Image (cartoon, rainbow, N blue to C red; front, side, top):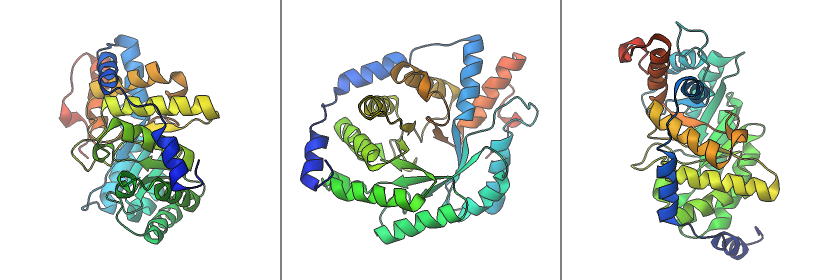
Length: 305
């Protein structure tokens, strides 16, 4: 199917069309599920363990990255039972600082690459960006696809770029970001999901967090259905990472329900599901303290990122 643009286009456009009304209704219905007591405590801890704690700002400093790494390792210094986050996500020039701060721990260093967030650079620049991040200590690479090429129907170019970045990343796991808010249709999100998976993505990811529409229950549900169907056909399991706009514990639980009801327990693990977030952790910690003490501690009781 990847022999030429025409064969790849034939495959991708041969995928079943998405029933947008049905998809959104299913996502909304699952979002009404309520969990209580021990199940809620489990979900909060699971969500904390799935966070890629992220700082992707032009004003990032080594001190800020070290502070974020310390928070990732011990999110609540007053409670050692609080799980660590899955990773710290930074720009490539901060990967070395993050790696040093997280050395000896299980928390991964994730680095965005490939001219994030727009992806408007030559392939040579994108590959150099990826290699620099891995050399600096990144365990995971979050790349962005060329949305212009994808929307123009140049699927083979996007496929080959993902393959090249995968090779440049070496042993680092590759998360492929589609920027779903710019893909316009659910059919395009389904096609991008399959394109990323057949090109070798270890994760498919919704968004950069830098546009108006980022992760939504509907687009994440669609991507979960894609990884489920891909494993059924190939035997290969692919992770999913919604990112951007997930700020509250209630949001996180809704996404975990989507995972459980769509792909099942095999994905309820931070090796296969992540949240790309910066402020979500604080709300999860406050909710965790509420379950433990019976009262809300307030935002002053958690560190400000």
